[in-house]
Image (tube, rainbow, N blue to C red; front, side, top):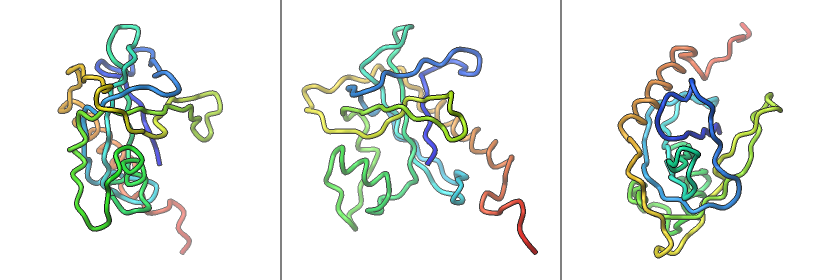
Length: 176
């Protein structure tokens, strides 16, 4: 599963990217964005993006923003199910769960280094898991996160990916 990490605001292509700190960090979930029809190496899937603000600030005094992407499924074997179960628990087979109800909820995020396949000189800092945090210790969202703008960027990226390969399930060299 591909994971991406972002910082809040600005055109990321024109400035240096500031990695969030590694290790454990207090965070708050600031948004849950559903994107339908995302192309993946396993076909087209609906995906959900969880956006967290960290307690740590970047050099420009904005909070770090980090996201984790999942296929939109609460099957017991899905990564989203496992992530939420470790964080808040309470998921039960056959019982509906509104993921958006987690917005504003605090946690401890464990951020670990990850090196993309084929890019040994590149390391990203990504969310590995979330753990429970006593409500009295939750951090407050800064209010700077722009949900509509972020959802628009996700949709633009989805359209670009579909335009590049409209049939992700189909191999280029199919034997006849």
